[in-house]
Length: 71
Image (cartoon, rainbow, N blue to C red):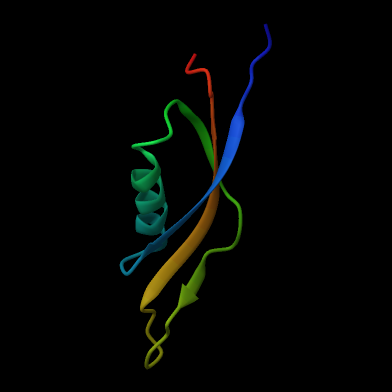
């Protein structure tokens, strides 16, 4: 039997860093997606809500692949 994987797009944000935005996306998905086998940043991270030249929020879109059968 061949391997099967599903891919889901996740969006994370943070007021701290890009890394924290990725972790927040993964943490939010953790309760519903099991057996994640890989994560790839799907788009360039963006900065939003810039005030006075400082970044207020970091936003990142990523794809997580997982085994829907849990093997």
